[in-house]
Image 1 (cartoon, rainbow, N blue to C red):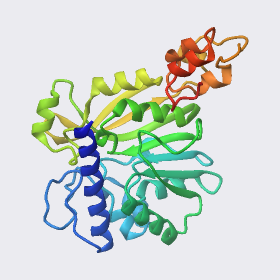
Image 2: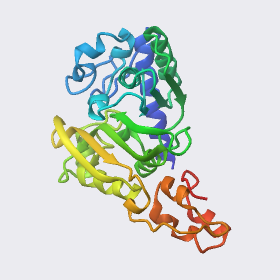
Image 3: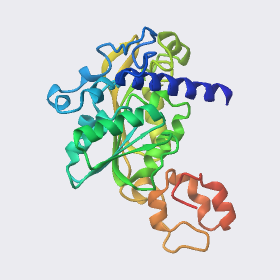
Image 4: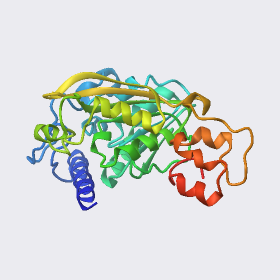
Length: 308
């Protein structure tokens, strides 16, 4: 636990420094793609604003573009549609939230969640400068998203899942906040299956978005364990030997039956009904909900899930 806590604080401090560098309030310690401490945001061509279409970034505040430290363009990956509700995990300076807000239009909405106060301050300033009214930035951890069940249609993230010290919790939260039939489109750093965790550590630091990366097989297995279907991981460009920027896609089944979960015809006392089962973050873990005492069901279901 101590090591995990230290890693989280290291990630937080490095991204806080990046936000201060953009606003001129301090120096950056480097972020994705850089382990330097030279006093400037150093991001190579495998990371950052260079991965976006200039036609998109030209209409955004400069600070939002400068603060882009990701490894892809998740708004394009997710193929956002007018009227959709979008959540960006690890929203940073707000570039992907602002691009999402433009894509979903005035009838849609874009949320950003970030744990770093300095990045949230920067994102809110950028939203005001962009005149974006269909956005909201929330402080929180991506392992415990401050939104209710089934709150969004699409989850995106840009090179942030690899920074989490509890990736199963992140994937479970993605599933929980998605409405049935929702989808995720994530950009992340992913290792080839032959690259061991030890070799990943040798290729780069945790805060450099390398050491904490999942392999392709680990990603697909993790998404399936969370309840997702149609998971895929597509490599796009190499960021280190055996390590790639990647597009990760998956879908939340539209019904519990599509996820292979039996739908009860009636709901006994202390039991999950069909609607609740549809919003569970891990339906297979809820077998004890029905036909069991309420206190047993509660113990079996994680607090972040849609079933009691």
